[in-house]
Length: 321
Image (cartoon, rainbow, N blue to C red; front, top):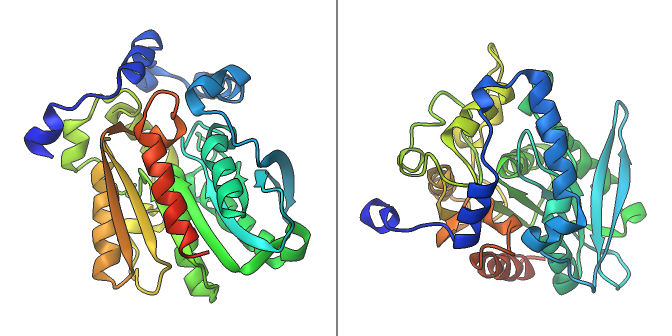
C-alpha cells in the first residue's frame, strides 16, 4: 500500500499485451455487443495459441470435458486427473472472469495440482453473468456441481471425505459461498483457496483504497468492475446474498489460503475477507505477491509470480488433503 505499491508496475509482457489489446468501452456496449465480445474472448482463451500466456498443462495429467447432469440443467466441467486410480481427493475449482472466462484458462494450475497432489480437479464452467444471468446463477452452478460430484463420488473416483475448493476472482466468490453452504449443510471440507477474490458486490464494492490505487490496472479496471457489479446484482437484488464479506457467520469454515496480487483493484477485498475469517476463528493464511496484478495465476507466461503462487497453493492443499 502507499508508496510501496505506487512505484510498482505490472510485468512488461502484461503492459505490452494491454497496449496492443485495448479494453473496449464497456459502458457504451449493448447487451448483444457484450455477449459477442465475451464469445470472442472465450474462443481466444480456449485456443492453443493462448497457451503462450495461460501456460502449458502438466503432461502427467489428463484433461477433458465432462457433463454434470442436474435436474434442471447441464453444467460442463473440465476435469484434470493424475495417472493413478481412485478414490482420490477432490479439488473443486471455479475460474475467474465473471462475465467472461473459461475453465480452459486454468489448465496450467489445475493440471499441476492434479499431477503433483494426486487429486481429481473438477473445474466448473459456470453460467457467465450477463443481462439475463445474475451472479446467483453462477453461485448455484458451483454449489450444485460440488454436491453432485460428492454425492456421486464413486462415479467420479473421488473420496468425499477429502474435498477442497479453489476459486479465482469471481470464482473466489463462488468458492467462498460454497464453503459457507457446505458448513450449513453439514458437509466437512478440508480447505479453501481464494485467489484475487472479488467478494464484495454491495454498494461498498468500490470503496477500497486498492480500487483507487489500481483503478486502471491492465487486467482489471474499476470500469469493468462497475459493469460486473451491475450485471451480477440487478436492481432489487440483495447484494449481500452474493457477497461473502457480509455473511453473518464465518466461523467453522475450512482453513483458507487467500492469495492477493498487490497491483489489483480487488486486493483489499481479499485482505478484508482474510481479516473477517480470522476474526471469526477460521484459520487463514494471507499471501501477497508484489508486482503481480489481477488474474496473474492464469497468466504464467507473462507473470513470473504465478509459479510462486502455484507452489503456495500446492503446499497448502498437500497439508490438508
